[in-house]
Length: 223
Image (cartoon, rainbow, N blue to C red):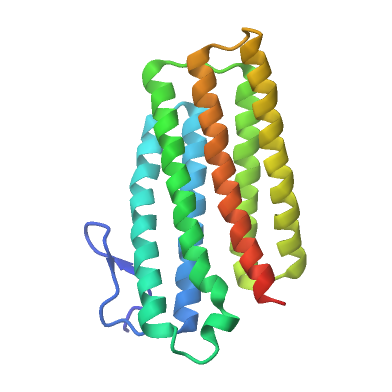
């Protein structure tokens, strides 16, 4: 039986030559890319919780696959699917989702870089900072899981939930950053730890922002 979809070769490269593409194939590949992005985020969160460099290295490798997937998916949309009647009007989220998933991958790579510095340099965070970062990881993971579900169902209630919770997420990041900066001014936090903590907040903020952009595209597509 002929295999369908994106297939990795022995080196993990994506191979699509000779594979017929249609909207169903594209949707399945976008869902697969979303699931892979979610797995990467969970790996990085695991690396943070367990102080585990191996998890970060695994996530780094998967990020490269995400970048490659985006290039293949975008090329396939432009070359093979954009001429199909009504495709860009009715299924535009399938075009935009890989772009934002790759940008989530970019932010995950920045997270990995920051956490590698934490482990390599033995940087310590306060219990409060650890709790805040874990809260943001958990909420970012939940929102990305919702994106995967809504790409399947296009459930309008779930789309609104993602948009509303995304805005709350941004407010929470801003609150954490503001309180942390005040603690730095008061001399409670070490400058090196503070710098990396704020970088982690920015990276998690970026992950949520691109997650929300996918939801906005889905919302616009259903009008």
